[in-house]
Image (cartoon, rainbow, N blue to C red; front, side, top):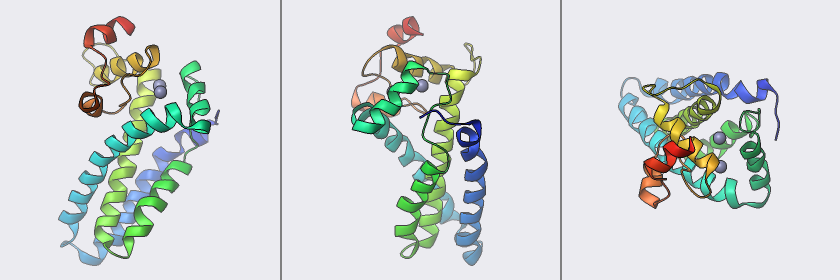
Length: 183
Ligand SMILES: [Zn+2]
Ligand SMILES: [Zn+2]
């Protein structure tokens, strides 16, 4: 779906605010006791996000009926402002991760949801950067750019945008020589 810049960039403003509010709500009631649990839950959420990102991209964006046609628009026009509108994805993470857990384990729910959201924001940033920024060899995002360009030029490889770890685990990482040639 082609979206305006407000919806395209909105998450980068909203997510830090939501994470701050979530942290204040959870840890504020148990300060400083809950801080470590909150931080560990955040790291867990961010790590789990990389797997979710891989699975959504590989199976939903490339195989599910409606999502596939939306994602194909990005493959056709990689630099257009195409994507799921901001607030929808972060709202969905909030509903799916935070609401069911908040009654049972409030600090974990807050940290975990924050980690998922920050992971999602990192994914959005890295994806945007690979298409829009001038990333040359030596840049910290160069590897991510090579990997993602490989995804755009070849079928069935490099579904991980923020990290290549899950492509390595599931055997979908393109060989480096192929990636360099494709980029
Ligand atoms: Zn794709
Ligand atoms: Zn892309």
